[in-house]
Length: 320
Image (cartoon, rainbow, N blue to C red; front, side, top):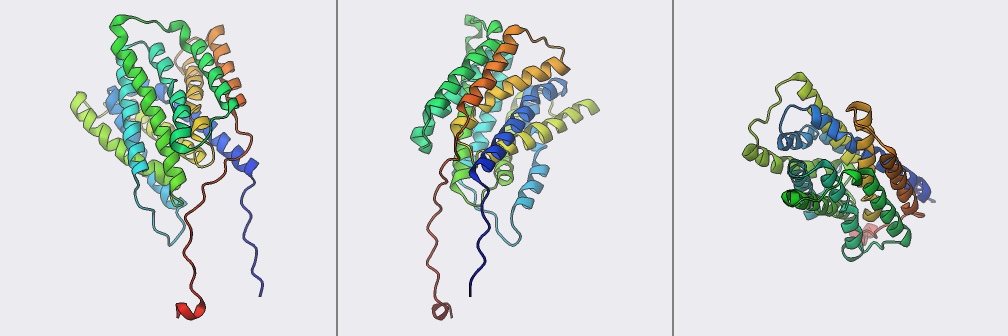
C-alpha cells in the first residue's frame, strides 16, 4: 500500500519574503513606540514595564493558537530566559540614556547593536557574515549618522549618558543573539510562545526596577492608559512577535538591521504626529538605510539546523 506524499514545505523564496515582510512590519511597530511613550503619563521605567506586561494576554492567546492541539509546550530554556533579561536591560539603559544625554546621541549609539550581532554571529551562532551584509551594515551606519548625526554632540558632562547608549546597543544586540538561539534550538518554540515567555521575564525585571525608581507606576488619565495599551499591543506584542517570527528564517546578523528601520520609522512618526521636522540630511539618511538593507538582503534561505535524531521506531512485533 502506498502512502500519500508529505505536504511540501514553503519554497525558500516564499519563506524569505514572508520573513522579510514580517521584519519590516515589526520594525515599523517598534519604531512607533516613542509616540506612545511621549503621551503616556508615567515615568520611563513604568512605561517600559507596562509595555511588556500589557502585551502578555495577547501573547498568551497567540502562543496557544500556534500550538497544535494535543501537544505540550516545550520546556523553558536558557536562551528564552536570557532574551527576557537582555530585553529588560535594553529598555532600562535606553531610558537612562535618554535622560542623561541627547536623544541624538542615545539613538546613534544604540544603532551600534547590529555591529555587535554581526561580530558575534560567526563565533556564537556559526552564521557567516557575508560581504553583502558587511556592506549593508556600513551603509546603514552611514545612513544613521546622516539621520541623527547633525544633532550628535560630545560633551564631558554627558559621557555617562553616552555610555548608557552604548550599553543599550550591547544589550539589544545580545537580545537578538538569544532570540535566534531560542528560535533555532527548539522545534516547539513558536514566535508567540517565545515572546510570551521572554516578556514574562522582562515584565518581572522591569516591575522591580519601576518600584525602586519611579514615584508612580499607574497612569492617571484615560489617554495615558490608551497609550500604554497601544505600546504593549502594537509595539511589543506585534513588533517583537513579528521579529521572533522573522528570526526563525533570517539570520541574526541581517535581522539586527531592524534597529535602523526603527530609526527611520521613528523619524517618520515624529514628523507625522509630533511636529518634528525632517531635513534633507535626515531624508537622505533614511534612503541610505533602506539601500543598505537592500544590499544586505539574503539571496537564499539559510540552511536549516538539523533536528535531533529521531529514535528508531520499533517493529510491530516489538511494539506489542
